[in-house]
Image (cartoon, rainbow, N blue to C red):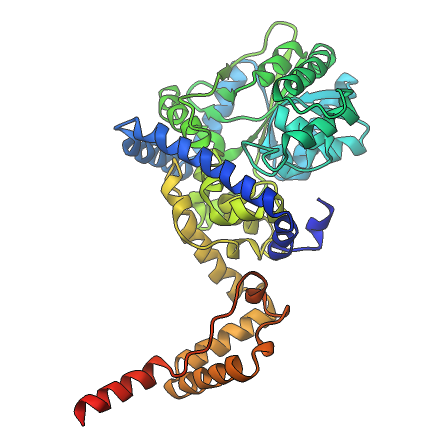
Length: 462
């Protein structure tokens, strides 16, 4: 979004909240998905054991990441996959472009990949004259709308079917006013069929990479990753270094957790394994760091690299549900994005760890037991210590700390506040007070609790 570079989360959330019916619908829809997750989880007596097992497997991976990366590379090369390493987003994008350039390819089909969103690959390739079409239905919708995805699993969750109908009418030629999801889906299917058949290059993400075998697994409900990869002469897979699991048998743990946590399904419709290229085609995998090794070195935050991108924390988060994904102005929104983004740019994303109630619901639903709300709190401390919090807020917190530490100042402050509420309410009830924008300020009490208690105690003793 164009506003993302100039506005922080509170201002972007305020933009989203101007449409109250949309906010309510967005909130209810995501909570419905969260409820589906709970139903799916409660059907498995071993659910908590699966979560703990997955968490420990990922802990093992992060503790031995360099060894598993080398093992995966060796086995992937043995399988005939060409492996590339990218230190950051720029290098990743340049590698992808060079592979297309070598083949003389100017058109590519892409399935969902949050890493490429993080690297802004589509924008980069467009500047190089490469046409990229996203084949995931939700991703295609936001691409046509010239917007980033607002959710890592449900990219266009912020769009209503009538709006999607208008987008398809403008770009794909569907009937004006058409909003039947079945007809719109068929319109997209016919549009993408030609894309799959004619694009010589396909790019996918990676859900899991198996160090033991050198294969990688992609999970989709639409089969679009398979269509693109199997019909193209070159398949490029973009993978963050944290996507590894040690052995193939561990997939049984993660595949049971991933989709139940994401959408309440038992498993994705397609869980596709790629281990070696077909005859006459190539598979390239680009393994990307882009700040992950820095996060790995932050002891208090490295657990965030366990994330398997299910989106459960977003579906349950009361702030995300009410503020919308675009308010986070980063590729991965919601609670998990708020602990990943400051690692990339602490100054730019200093607002995000404060976009939370710290209620802990995100940690409770995380399938790999990331302590998300604890990390959000820790990021707040780091951001304030590093001087990236708003100056006015920092000064206000210092004044509050001083007041709360002094009984005399506390009593004086309380008395002053009651007088202001009683005789000059306009000093509080105005647009300069963010609390007043969404709330009615309370009526001032006649006395403080301390005064009431002292009078009551005195009356008893007399």
